[in-house]
Length: 359
Ligand code: CTP
Ligand code: MG
Image 1 (cartoon, rainbow, N blue to C red):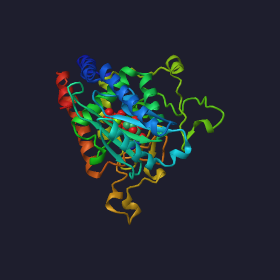
Image 2: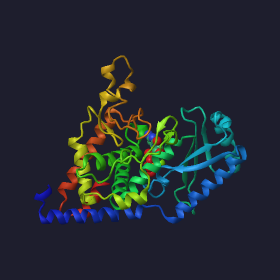
Image 3: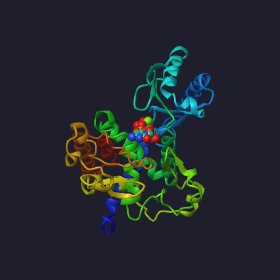
Image 4: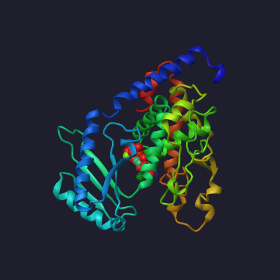
């Protein structure tokens, strides 16, 4: 590695990066798809306002963090300014569910009793919309809007490298079936945090600054930076970032990808380390996130809760990877190793490497 890179190997890395760009490009959403989704958001917002005039419907997640793929789900959140009404979220979910059922073609599934009340909407495929639309509406989850903005700001610093890496890893994790939080593996959000952690805290020199720690030009009052009791401050002035921050790391996307896979295959200490984009490497012990075997007396499910630990950037007591089971982690690590192997074996044929990887 490093100084020892031979000319053909350097050429391979350049070619690999080109292949990654061309692999990701046709998977981006079309302008038409984005417009349709914005129309759907507006339509649902108008309907919801007939029940609760003080409400707004905002997008979050991949439709606005710049890591969206074609035909991805829509994440929406209903924000209610009338505090009185906000207290009755579960009644509201039921009423809105009924209304959408009556007034739209969506298949509606309100889950008012869920820990976080949501409404699931699906629009079946039609000639104009060959993949249909799947959409989750949550309520009052303001932290999700902030963490979406944080991811977007990170992407904006170095879009060519960050977006390519994250988008490729999303496609890869979906095709390799390790992007299913309901089946013991990790959400896209979790994979994205793993990438940012790697670029901020593992790469030396770093590819990205730590936006939550950068020379704190914080507002005077702490009030302004708190939502639901959490400190959500980060440096979000992208103009200044573009002018004043430049990375001393010039590795190509291909090189970073190989190193990402290698790091999470062999170097990262899954047993005792917590991934924190806010604070770097933390110990599970310092967070009280030991495997519950040590705690004793808890059920099987609880035992699996802290296999993989990723601290949420704002909701710091929350392990984003708590869905990952023992088997899930074993599979994910196996996939990191497979990817490392493929990328170091197919040096002569970079296109083949990229395709084999995301088979
Ligand atoms: N989110 C969260 N905590 C989680 C999972 C998700 O707060 N454990 C929020 C984040 O705001 C995230 C959004 O939900 O940006 C969407 O998460 P996810 O669906 O995992 O990511 P997307 O970028 O939308 O990816 P995909 O295209 O796979 O839907
Ligand atoms: Mg999503």
